[in-house]
Amino acid sequence: MRQGPLTGLKIVEFAGIGPGPFCGMLLSDLGADVVRIDRKGQGRGAPSDITSRGRRSVALDLKKPEAVEACLKLMDGADAVIEGFRPGVMERLGLGPEVALKRNPKLVFGRMTGWGQTGPYAMAAGHDMNYIAITGALHAIGTEEKPVPPLNLVGDFGGGALYLAFGLLAGVIHARETGRGQVIDCAMSDGAASLMAMFYGFKAAGIWKEERRSNMLDGGAHFYDTYQCSDGKWVSIGSIEPQFYALLLEKTGIDDPDFQKQHDRSAWPELRRKLAHVIAQKTQAEWTGIMGGTDVCFAPVLDLDEAPKHPHNAARQTFVEIGGVVQPAPAPRFSATPGAVQGPPPAIGAHDREALSDWGFSDSEIGALQGAGAMA
Image (tube, rainbow, N blue to C red; front, side, top):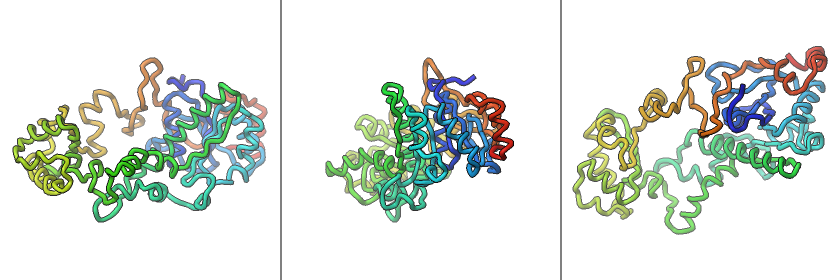
């Protein structure tokens, strides 16, 4: 039995990589019934395939017309579709939005790409770093010497998967009110640009400099940075507000009058050097004992082994273990309709008969697919 605020929502997901599966995971975690169309013979289903968790897999050979018709029938009964192919691929398969929406006018057709469905780069390959590079985001992140890719959090997952989930749900609300579905053109480059709204505002206000590590939020300010401790581990300090900054000075025992120049940019490099020297005198655990849980705006910088064991994460059960794999729990949290990990990552084709039957296929239709070699 599925649980969560999206229980009853039906999603068809065409298997892909990166943001598409993550979007499917988010929707499944909140209760949506997500059926993933996998290609026969692909290898998935390991417990470590976390972003595949919680949905059912149907393996189809999309070169077979019977499989294409099966996909269209699934979309006939769906609220939304997720696909992450290059522009034109779904159309060539006979599964494009024009065909699907003609059959199901309320369908929300979500298209996840790096560059979008149109534009000079639309047909070009790329990865997260490339998509955020043209938005200004990558230029703003890194050291003085070079931009540094911020994992694939900003493009794939922040600008891609989250915007696709947001767009799909907005589209479903509209479709339920009006009876009209639509296409969601979700480009990671668009989403990453949207995430930069505040920084473009800072630029317009004249308070953002293009040089990396020269601004308050990019590591330029001594009161918003990471510092290495005596044991080689790191801590994060974000004491922006004056009362939090005063507490930082109190907790670190700093009485140097130069630190009263908190917002003097010309003083930041030297103040960062001085604060680094102070932090380097104690271990991460010692500083956590002094500043952890206070209004300094402090947290230890933890690795992936340490993070699930942190007392705050443990108390909130921020991480769960499924099939021996530690992984993030569903988020956000709902008071009345909590989400849940609906199941482990499925093996390819693990739910061929079960999922199709639940979505309205008769035994004879399922048998015909198998007989035509269109389904495993």
